[in-house]
Length: 215
Image (cartoon, rainbow, N blue to C red; front, side, top):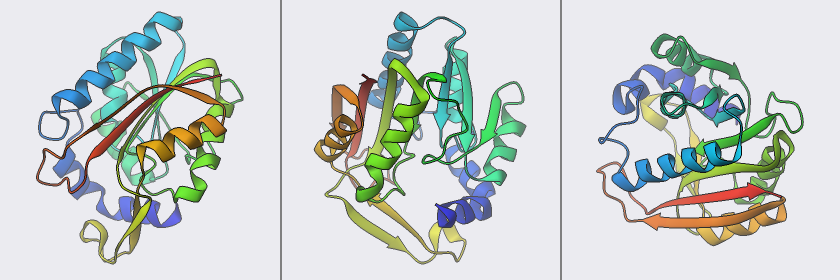
């Protein structure tokens, strides 16, 4: 994850210029936004209004802002200090903290739910279970988890000039069935999966989504 942090630190300005600081129709399809809205409703039906929800790998705070705007007590987590600066600039009223997917800054059972919106794309397939076990640790029993990711067969995509930084970075395209299997091994029950075709110019593969519940 050190490589990913270096790339996102170096490319924060360009990244924000591309995706913005809010969810939008330029980067999220109607299906994407509907899944986020459904996740909010699931969380609200099962947790108190004060229960904390984490946007893990928050970047400039786009998903965290969406969650807060829908009444959830969200905190954004990111490994890139520069991305957190951008998030604080755009969303000064949203709680933010530094942290890694495999080492989250929360006590055991400290969260009601979490969103990993394209946060597992730099996690190798063999490390997915480690990330999911850490999410299991910080979520309360019954806690909800929403994942979004680029789909494939676990293949690695190597870039030597990631986001125009001149730095190398590897991303992984995970299969929905593989993600489901690793989640279940880590102590989650998967209750919804979907996959959509690429609809934006920057998408080169289908996009996968999984909603799961900690046992």
